[in-house]
Image (cartoon, rainbow, N blue to C red; front, side, top):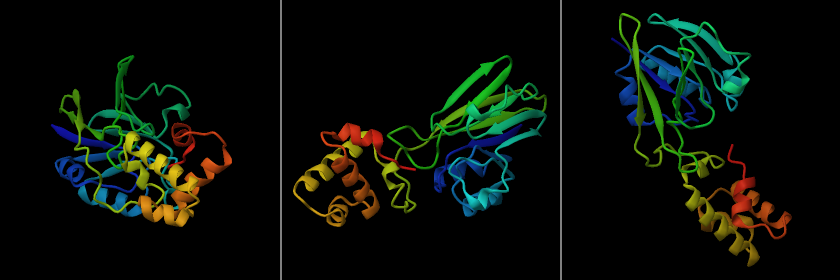
Length: 228
């Protein structure tokens, strides 16, 4: 029996719980949005790793392909970050791995498994943290297991622009409402940043959205907020 750990959208965070599971695996597949070469190197030190480039992987990830076709333990795979960019249905693939949405998805169509392991990196908008474990028998049969991870914030220090991804939607709304109140008082963005425990860049972005869209409310600001 072979074990394949399938992850995606780590965005620079490799949680200890994820590493513990991956250490029991014979191979690792990463569906993109890795974030850093160091994280990929850490994965490769745990087990042989196959990865594709995600839309947020830049420069260092240029050597990584956007789509890969490969065989592993008697199964044929196709892997891409955003399945909407597939040139067509991969007829020869037993399993199609993808990511991008941060949502776990598992479906079988025409004898093929379509699998999005979700995100096991930064928690985004309160979505669950997930990964998948594929167990392959010598006969070529396999079983897939969804793994739900603890929903606590990552211990890695997030970058200012991505730190908001650790907040639930309710927490984000409270933050935006606080920024609106302070902006109405005429408080500068730098002071708002300190008071609300966000980066000056995030505070300026929120203030700008509020001031340049008269009548906008917190929900609408959140809809326009860029976290990437």
